[in-house]
Length: 391
Image (tube, rainbow, N blue to C red; front, side):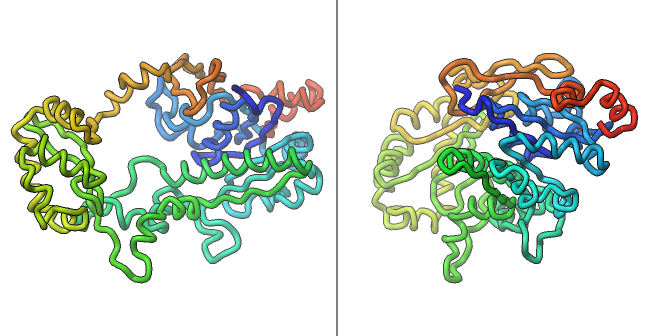
């Protein structure tokens, strides 16, 4: 299940968004050449040292790649990069705004030299526009996209606990590149993919945006509960553990009242008969539901919810996710090599046929000499580039 075998991706990437997109392409069989700064490399390599001395971010998004160190600001390094792109299928970059164009790596210039090339630019806000030159880290984009306005509890805003704007941009880059490869197969022509973190995140904000359509009040911050559907969120059981549950329709609500709350009359109580009423009266209803949960252990509560059935879940810690029985039952965990030894790796969602591709996470510049030799550089030339810090 590696449909992208034979596709070469050159990625001038750093942090999360572009590496996440290119890793997905690599998981599907593409050859991904990751271009990094000599000496330091992708700065995500130094975010932390939690995985046997390696960065958790870097290990996550950089398996199945080759690392080429190259100073593309040096004319010799820039010439090498252009030679590499002459035969590439895809070029991805998420440098600072304008940096790629200044280095002669703009989409128009590259596609003039290689019309089949698909160029994917990933940026914080896109160009043109008043924000095009602004730095755009994940939290900044979450803020600009309105995500923080609906995340948190009451007056206390909170960021999403993962790099959601980076991931959103990476996934739209990935899917857009796949679409561009299909289009190229039909027309023979490459294309320019332009993805902004802001636009990717705002696309994911569709529900709260439409909820506030035409000046309507926005959904309140509701912590771990749903902002507009009730009951839908966490409830503490009598043993101190938290159970997450959700009612999605009136049929479930009636069954929940009868079989869990043991109060069937609540199903038709005018204060709780529809979701709109339950949401408006969530404080009073919450007291009733919380009291019932307090009479049960978390296991007893989940057994009753499962018997109705009503959607429910444990609130797992990350340690518990590593041991999640469903992931184990589906064989999702494998091993991937790293410079510090093998570590567990979750395979790409959706691929269930055949063995997954799990080539190692590369060391900095691990493949530099081999790639330069592929391009026809003599050993003495390579030695010079490495010695002088160009490669």
